[in-house]
Length: 167
Image 1 (cartoon, rainbow, N blue to C red):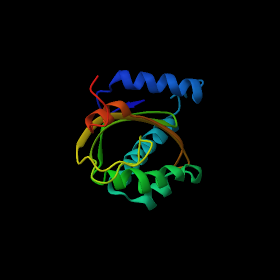
Image 2 (cartoon, rainbow, N blue to C red):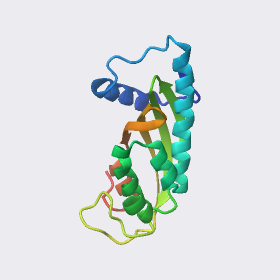
Image 3 (cartoon, rainbow, N blue to C red):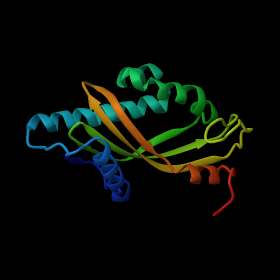
């Protein structure tokens, strides 16, 4: 087990509970030194994936993801990044357990093109910057992400962009 930062346990506990219901039953034991080597490699690969995401290096993202997950890259390239071209995520916390990596990030982005994400029909750019904390769970096999899940606070993002009323 490797903990490089103070982990927000609210996010981590949700990810662990979700993952244990869907994928990790039971969690992988860290009894072998090979597990630690794989965990360190998976941590580095996850950071490399995040850098590729931030720099819009779609080829590198493709190299790090199983073919079955390339729909995510198409979404980012064609829907999300055009609406938020300055989006940038920074790592707040990262944790590895076996072949799983859990990443908590903070993203800032400005909606500077028509918004086609989280809405029924495109709306004009708001030119408003938002900031939110997100977390992701990544399952790695042979140097590729084979499964992942993200949790974002879409309601908070829509509120910051002025698309919904304040609570």
